[in-house]
Length: 287
Image (spheres, rainbow, N blue to C red):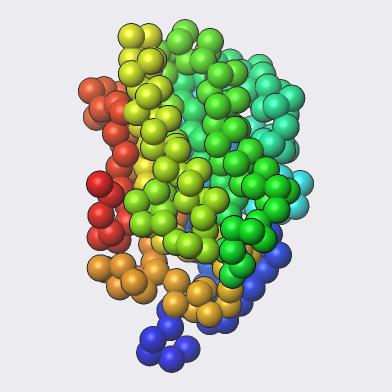
């Protein structure tokens, strides 16, 4: 690599796999140490097979939570690794193959989680889709819009709606995955950035609606994080320079995002935190 690049040239087909990335992302496998902050909680994480989702699953398990997570059929090999990390932490893992663009799959996901874990305390709406583009709005077809909005936004509504009866019973919490793109949108990610701005609005709105039920709702807005989504959806030259435009001068790792999700899920530490978006951006502003 030259001095002005961070990663070697690489590209994958969506949704991307961890095993094909150089270097392999850090999910906290060797660094995260739990302190029983989520002892005996039950969590559902969408898109938990890789990237930020895997790091959250690992951290939650090491903090004492049982974890259910969703994955796509193409991501089975990544899902197997996440399942093993949760079980190695001594917690129960439930891997659920689901297409979150299908409301029936969403209903089945929540039902399976509660049946196998016994309850639901924490919902993490993490799954997301993006595809960088060089063409203009006129060339953006409805199929792409459907995939982006259904994966990122519709599924959040569907999952939250299906989970609410269980979260009311447990006085649980919801954590949504937003993005720096909600604040500094890239023209190449027009549709993706729009969904992330909407997620910020939904987060604040749901916090107001669900607060009287004892349910906290927050979001985390990551900056450029090294996950399979990047080499699978960005041009090679963007991947090579990925994250170098942050004040810290580098991309983040999934392991650096997961602690924010732990904090927001922890009743002892975040019992009065609701309706906020916590930035983990390498110095890019979230306001």
